[in-house]
Length: 295
Image 1 (cartoon, one colour):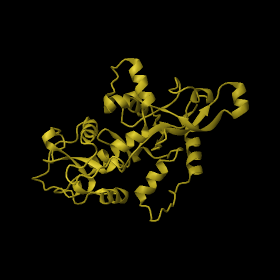
Image 2 (cartoon, rainbow, N blue to C red):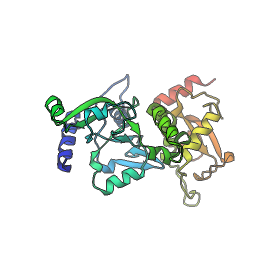
Image 3 (tube, rainbow, N blue to C red):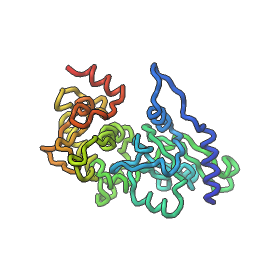
Image 4 (cartoon, helix red, strand yellow):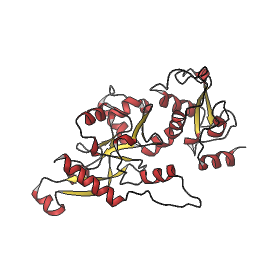
């Protein structure tokens, strides 16, 4: 399959989706960011330019504003491959970190095959490619399948140390971790951590802390919030039903200092009240949840 054919089909999908983001109303006008999130959470994904895909710490994001994953839309796999028992032997994997696989794909000039998504269902729209003449007569050489369940990339799981995953584990444990992986859980656990990592407090030149977030900060953040029962250590609000609104704050401002004495679990509003954090954005749904659930 020629790369030019891939671009043509991706452009066709872009035209079918429409270049404008959906104008949706839910009692209040959605911000541009919220509209993007709505679009990303659709199963068909969102075609973006390479420069729109930013890394923030260990995470892949859309323009540095929203956690996202990447997957191949126009796959080289048949309908039978894609609809085989999960996890399929032959099917694209989705990515949520800038792993070695993505590095290789970009170097080979094959990055245009990827689509950005936040599909919490783990179901995706994928284009199948048929080689068998009988299947081609039934479906055509290339045809789109909806609600295909894709598996996470094991390199991404390893790089993020997600739920203690390691490529050095026995194969049976790795396969079980892949089967149990939930995009809903991944986003619930890490949206708040990402919001902390993308936020850069304003400092003077003299007070600017050196260094950045460590690669294992997402793991540390999730473990600490779990240990605290998903409750804010300052106001006591329980955020187990709104995990993205519970953050881990570096008390001394040094992002690379993950010692327990330097970490504090705070809801987004308590975090916003910390020095130099006044400009931190708190989404309206998070703010409502915190205020209504404080005792």
